[in-house]
View 1 (cartoon, helix red, strand yellow):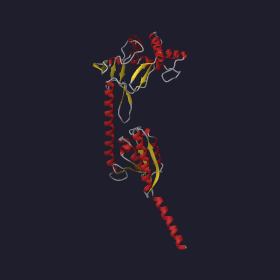
View 2 (cartoon, one colour; view 1 turned 90 degrees about the vertical axis):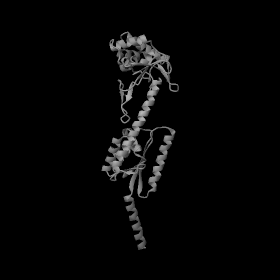
View 3 (cartoon, rainbow, N blue to C red; view 1 turned 45 degrees about the horizontal axis):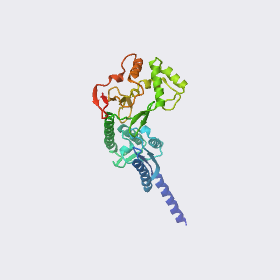
View 4 (cartoon, rainbow, N blue to C red; view 1 turned 135 degrees about the vertical axis):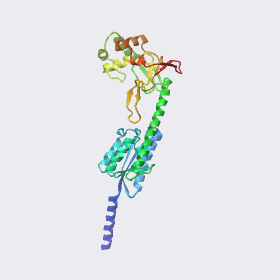
Length: 328
């Protein structure tokens, strides 16, 4: 009986030592789009890593961290990624396993920043496809090289997307249109049709502006008359009024490429003052106000000086619809 008790005690001690030595492993999964196939991929990744970690006797499951349909270039937008990093820094995770560098981050600087941060806490990151363990001697050198490749892939994709958007703009297709007061937008055929109820508000704004009323005065009048903005708000700002006055869509034209993305990593957008191509299409859709009224309003706004947008265009081209398209 004594021997049996000793054996049981030894067995419990060995199990305790094994549990003590087991690595607490967490997995990070990510998919880049919200299509059905990608979401299925997301679910598959979660299932795969759950089973993988549980199948390793020397590992214990520290958690599955997963972000759906969020860009890989900016880690700040990935909530579960940030939660994973916090748990690692708090000493709750010994190793992170992920499919590839591009799943972890497609920004070289972010990849190295977080890998080194975790390395200082003796937390390994293992990239399955590249077979890299960041705690090994040659792990970081390989990581620098492969992270750069992943970032280049993002930049190539971004360049292709930008090229595709430019081709759409050349055809006169609305790109990134968020809607504007006075028009209804049909996303299927990408057409603008006049919303007469809202158009009456637009005509009132232009009438009062050409009569000499300022943006803040008109905004107050619109509130008193009970008119609502495109988003349904009863509150009007003078900047909203001025934005309508400056919008070329109300005379039936359209300017495409007003803003541009600086780079695919920061995704910062700036107003386009000639850094990228812009496209101005005349008679694109039914106007709400005449060109004469629009130009009179611009003269009031600019004090008789031609607006910067009007100075942008240099070359005439014909669009597929036969409308005049002016390209910067």
